[in-house]
Length: 237
Image 1 (spheres, rainbow, N blue to C red):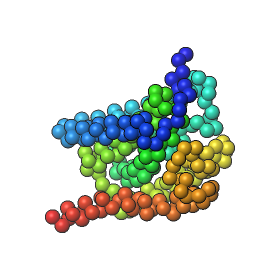
Image 2: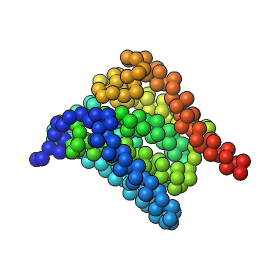
Image 3: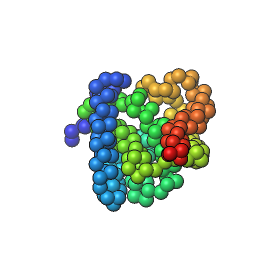
């Protein structure tokens, strides 16, 4: 069997392996949104749901592949990290398109996924399976949420900030329980990622967790600001 994830060098920040996928995703997203605005609502829904299904299949296929190889660690490799979990369940959102789902996901995805895009944690570079899985999931989630904003015209409200925060606390509690039972490190609650990340500026465990909790609502409020100013601008015109 061909090993599609043979050990390659870790992806470096600002290398071509880092920058090129982002540029391609930006071009694709702009093109997709412009095209989607010219078609029917039914087709708009169909296109984004196909993208969400593709993201989900990518995550599931990645895990099945490693199970087949026999190098899968059920204690540490389950798709329970936030972005992987969102990658699995994102078709539920694009199928039902409930506003309360958008309220939660808009902040989770923009805050969490953007950090992963800016400081990627990819141990195996191009052309490994993990490399493609990482970018399809993280950039794909951003495509879904920006599509919702600019095509479906969905906008969060101020109370959405707090809904998303409290939903995140539920996820954190579940991951604390999973880490305790599996002796794992999902959501990096027991230690920071190996690669460089914003967590490096927040001290060692448990201080980086405490600091992250303190800045979540301010961060969500910053994400909300453009929507607030846009709403006020429309109200005054």
